[in-house]
Image (cartoon, rainbow, N blue to C red; front, top):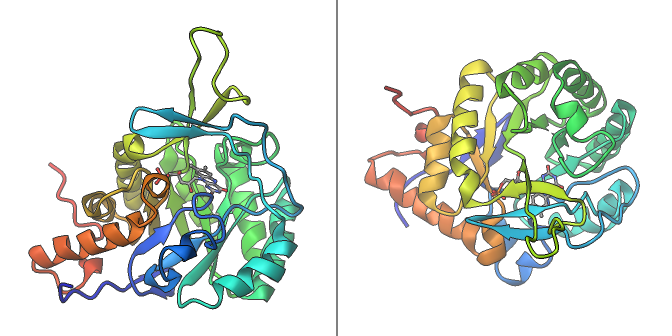
Length: 306
Ligand SMILES: Cc1cc2nc3c(=O)[nH]c(=O)nc-3n(C[C@H](O)[C@H](O)[C@H](O)COP(=O)(O)O)c2cc1C
């Protein structure tokens, strides 16, 4: 391995490398843990949690697209208490940062979950205000600056010392407006992008492929959108960014870091290759070495716009 310091610090949380796995694409790590030691990763954004367990949406809820997928899973999860009792102790066996991802129907629900998770001792809380696949809450908070700020304030007030990172939606006209609102609301970091709303139709039956009709698009096709949005947000706010959207190679992670991300998450790419995050990490360290960098963190914000 090249002699590059791969550690990064995101809102006071130091990770051994900048590679995380994106919420909802990694469950709680149990399945992927059969392939490799979870301690290889910088951080795990756990599957999105709600206050009470959810069955998620009816199937079909995944459809392929050129260089990506559409999903309408709809936050299927066992609920925050079951996560704390059963999944967190499993994740704690590993030397990896645990980032809990939460969605609420009301600001109060976000507050209750933050209180439970901070007491349980997660390393960071990722506040999802950008899920396109649920009716209540979700995207409604992520597309309106004043609601985004309110949810952030409530989360911060109940998270104790645990840093709060707010996950932004790309389904907006100006993502910097929401980023500024959550920074003003006290967010310690932002993560972006969540999925882009999309739709596919079966031309023979005239039926949408997904039972929910529409879904969220992710995978390699969305990378340029993610890079552009990370770049815009990095110029608009001072808080650090966890970048994601379409990462499947070291070069993709390097682009997000150059655009301004401190760390990067891999999601959909793992459905084709469970080892993708490790491959991305190793390729990224080679890119940094080839450029003569001592620390991978030197890539962050290094883009030279024309
Ligand atoms: C099947 C699936 C489920 C997801 N579930 C969540 C979730 O529970 N919470 C969340 O914040 N993001 C969720 N996401 C969004 C991802 O975390 C990520 O932001 C997005 O997929 C872009 O990254 P990618 O192109 O590398 O997958 C989900 C994505 C997929 C594909």
